[in-house]
Image (tube, rainbow, N blue to C red; front, side):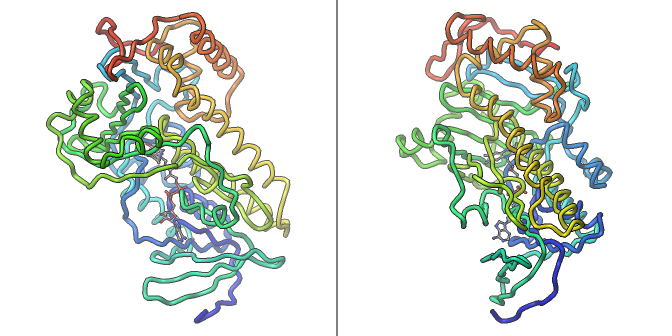
Length: 437
Ligand SMILES: Cc1cc2nc3c(=O)[nH]c(=O)nc-3n(C[C@H](O)[C@H](O)[C@H](O)COP(=O)(O)OP(=O)(O)OC[C@H]3O[C@@H](n4cnc5c(N)ncnc54)[C@H](O)[C@@H]3O)c2cc1C
């Protein structure tokens, strides 16, 4: 160590993404001394551009809503899901959900969005240090000690009463403690980048995210501006390894051989290199311990299909930071609220996981792509997929009935089964189902 600071901070946050920035805002606005250590310099590229309507509540709580609204991001009103051949196709419109209180979200260029949040954390009073990588941590009885390394090679040591791990997929503390658990049946790879010239929905559907489902893989298309879209392919890691293809070649072939993708991407040009990320679905065995709270992806990440990552990251950050404020004020290192935070985080993740797990089955897709107005079940789904986490009974029973129908569809067709031929998906009458209320 070249220097050792004896200053005792209330909290150190590792990572300045949406989770770290949100927690920093909550702590700083409560008058706590908080340092954010971020290894990159913002703005920086990041995947995860499609937000959910319920993000708005957290934007308002941390006082950044006006800046987000003023940034000119693409407004997202719905999500379109289609089979690879283009049909069947279903459109979920947030405003039509009977139990969805916020009708809109945003599609954001993450470099810009994350920068707004981190600057807001600084303006709220957090000491934000970019270009500082955390290389070690120790939790002792009286404090947490964090070791850092700057780009010029200088090492340092910082102390605080609490540590919040917001390091995203790197999951710094959990990885060091060996408590990162992957979902064994759910090992995926994503190949993605930004493109210009993608044909995206227009008029009243402008801003919709488009998801194209193939037999064993799927594609996302997120309009960031009228010219630029984020496009990504998700497939099983086993399948990716078995094919042994270069990501660029595989991506191009899937686009060429999938009618709906070919239609939308025929004139597209890459605007960034393709990125690859693997094995990103995991959960920590433990999310809180004395003087330590894990938030955002560092607590766990499931799957990108329902665009829940940023919302859950910000929500866990807000809730985790509130626990830290209470613990600081009570002068305790591990509180009942921290344990409750872990239980509630697991419950929310389980709720999304129930959808994600079923989503990768054909019987779920059969029902999802051919929705009906029966009992307004789709309004229940709409609320969850909009990011509503405190669910009323009216939503909860509808989800259970929907899951029962998914179970039934496997045994007896409740709706016609989609025939996936060469990944083309179905031979249905060409009509778009508006997901009903
Ligand atoms: C393929 C894919 C597609 C996705 N699509 C979506 C989507 O459409 N919508 C959505 O909401 N979510 C999506 N997500 C999820 C979303 O990207 C994450 O959930 C979100 O970024 C989590 O925020 P975070 O702050 O926890 O982590 P991050 O945003 O990853 O931030 C972590 C920060 O910690 C820093 N850091 C890491 N290690 C250290 C260290 N040792 N020292 C200092 N700093 C460090 C990093 O530089 C980084 O800036 C997607 C994820 C994947 C894998």
